[in-house]
Amino acid sequence: MRVIRILPNLPVADVTAAKGFYTDFLGLSTEAFNLGWVARYTSPDADSGGGAAVQLVSGDATAPEDSVISAQVDDVDGAYAEAQRLGYEIVHPLATEPWGVRRFFVRAPDGNVINVAAHRS
Image (cartoon, rainbow, N blue to C red):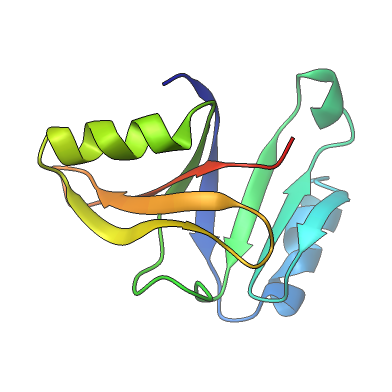
């Protein structure tokens, strides 16, 4: 498994209400996606490999806990098998979500919950 990118997942009470600070003040003006309960905002140069991004999360739609970061990987099935082999707690089982992301949540030894995901090509 290779990690492609890691994004912070910031807890917010309301994605829409929080959006202005991150888009206007911080300049993360590109909305990569918005599912209502989670949205990603990026700087305009994020597609060129640089830039910055943040995900705002008001409560995960299918997982029992929210994650602190999302790690996009090239082989989510392999990552799931490795997490199980190493005995890490799986917080949310490997699943293909209705919005097309294949993911699982794993608890790091320090207690943080990590969303490990692969996006459709």
